[in-house]
Image (cartoon, rainbow, N blue to C red; front, side, top):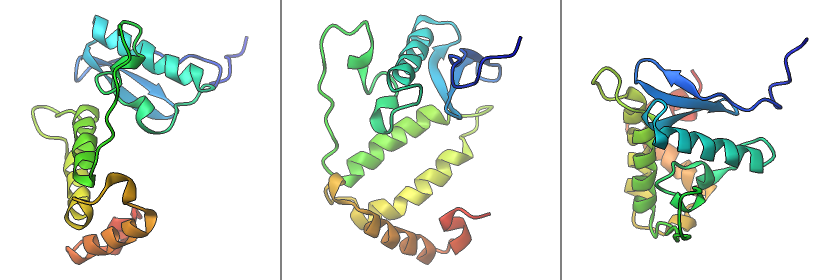
Length: 165
């Protein structure tokens, strides 16, 4: 008997040996789960992510819906009331919220800081310098071209800035 197609199977709850935590791979992206493997917190986050995936037609919804449980606690079945989520007022607040999520997504390895996190912080430094105090919803794709030029001006090669290797 053949295996069901990948889009019909529910993503598995997996064990990450190096960290001792759980993770789930959904739509090709790995989502690390909080807490130790098989802990209540970890299983609840797994169920929340898989539930979101199923409710959105078996694909992860774009944007903040896939954020970790603390940011969107009102989506968990244990929450008693709906808590409002405040949208950041300026770009610096948005960057800070994103870096908090990145620290969760890229945990330290073998006691050392994850290098991916350092690359993300470096890239966001230009955005913060140019548009930090401006309204978060006012940054548009045209502004990001200026951020790329600023990044190149800081000494990074153009191929690295646009992601070609």
